[in-house]
Length: 258
Image (cartoon, rainbow, N blue to C red):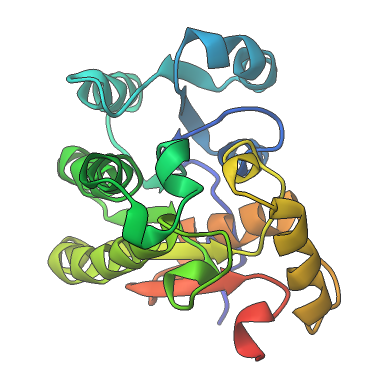
């Protein structure tokens, strides 16, 4: 018999990284998790971001911690804050990505070694670092999610450097799923269609990318922040207990058509 309670995050404790403003995927995920009854700690990049984010998180009872994953000790401090508050973790959502603009806006063949390395470190390897820190505190198992994009598996104009970086992220998801599965920790990449977030605004001709996606989509529209959050909430719930190691699209069907 179906357990309706499995389709909720009530009573779960979670950590959501990467809230930038009201349009960020991390914010959509954190807000829905709270609405479903989860307790949540969230992160933003720094004090500059905090002035935009705290007015969102404070009214719904989400603790906010500054965390720049390039700064030594900040990721560790974020996880410690969450564990000290909750005693354990049930889900972790990693929604951070970054590349230097000069590398992001150029051809992949022209990217600098330093820029590529920083993009991989921030957007991909930080997920593995986060998992290492969080897994010991997921004694009952749980879910870890990161955010990808269609450009990981095919060449998307203007997506450039982030395509190979997201491909690495999706591969990392599969290896993390294999390694953490014995601890009943499930790992997924969520691959949304394009929506106008602060990170997306750094991609050249992003309006054109959104227009192309809408024209190709079988649903004939772009997806919403709420739809991305709903998929993420499902994957963090007990209803998804038999799933791990996948890249799951929420893009109106764009990935399925030529």
